[in-house]
Length: 221
Ligand SMILES: [Zn+2]
Image (tube, rainbow, N blue to C red):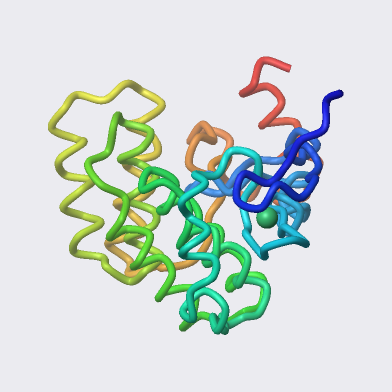
């Protein structure tokens, strides 16, 4: 009765994957912490019937079958290979989902330690981000620009948010980002590091247990 089917070819498909909730801090670009983080390859499904890729094959727009059957889609050879499903989803998703798919492709490149591919996907992600629809979206965009090496654009975006009198939490993230940008730091950082109260920072252990405790308190757990 409750069978779901691919919207493009009617092949039966499973319901969307539900990852376990994160226990550790997300990155500043909101890549979730573990145990969610390492389930990423399951966030999208590949249809065994037509080769479409999406978090929910039943939710695709049926006319996208044209893209799925196109030479560009079929011959797509991503680097690293783990990025392929996310790039394919980026080709067939609604415009609003494209930036997210490109960011996930960048995360697969991070995991494969392919810096060049990660920068390339982050730049494509930033290009399709559009106008941020709030402070959180803008803060995320700053991190994407910074990690793509677009430091001037990241600082410009940060300066714009700073003008808007952000709340204390956003201000902490903003200060942390601007300090990283000033240092030319394009590396990965945790949200927990940006939100850690300054009084607690000197030589605190960076062990997993302290991060977990902090993040659980942050979430009111
Ligand atoms: Zn299909």
